[in-house]
Amino acid sequence: MGSYGRRIQRFFHDIRIELKKVNWPTRHELLVFTGIVIVVIFAVGIFFWILDTGLTALLKLIIR
Image 1 (cartoon, rainbow, N blue to C red):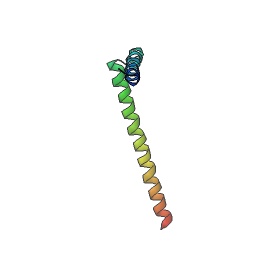
Image 2: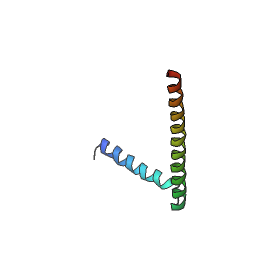
Image 3: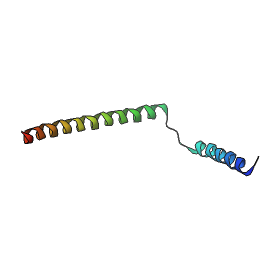
Image 4: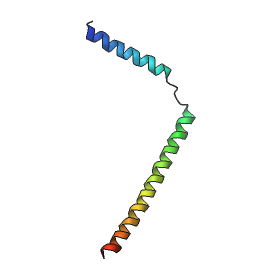
């Protein structure tokens, strides 16, 4: 194997070593964090929807 091949092999070897060091979340933590993210996304979406609707109504009043 050439120098390039050894570098690729070393790269993937290093990836495996680093992935073993990762502190993976438990199933429960993953579900809780996913739920939090979904709730925050909906809350931000609703906030911007209300803001957009309000500013649109305000602009319609100003333009008329």
